[in-house]
Image 1 (spheres, rainbow, N blue to C red):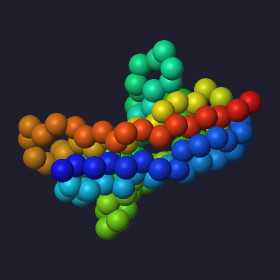
Image 2 (cartoon, rainbow, N blue to C red):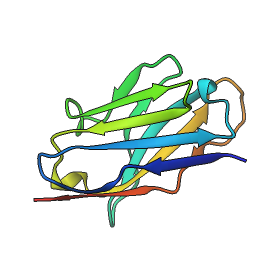
Image 3 (cartoon, rainbow, N blue to C red):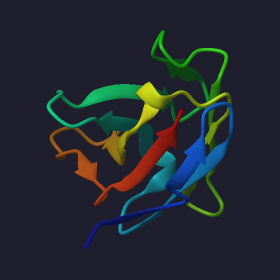
Length: 119
């Protein structure tokens, strides 16, 4: 059974930092593209950052230069370092895994972790 467990969310002040972690089990982590999405109240879920199997990152324009995604294949964990936080970063952040080697598998999602940034 697949489990993606996020941690590290919480309350931060504008300009502050938080580090999210997502520990994976039940998947072949090294086969997966990993990503962080977020969903603010009343808005659609959006991609924040992704990282390929080979470690290539990709970022939404809104977080470029502030957020850094990384992965540790041995630990089966993906991280999101969030710096220079803004109130508009407030959202529930979700970890996402997509196997890019085996065709036809569904994507997997974590339960989400709340990030709240106060002004």
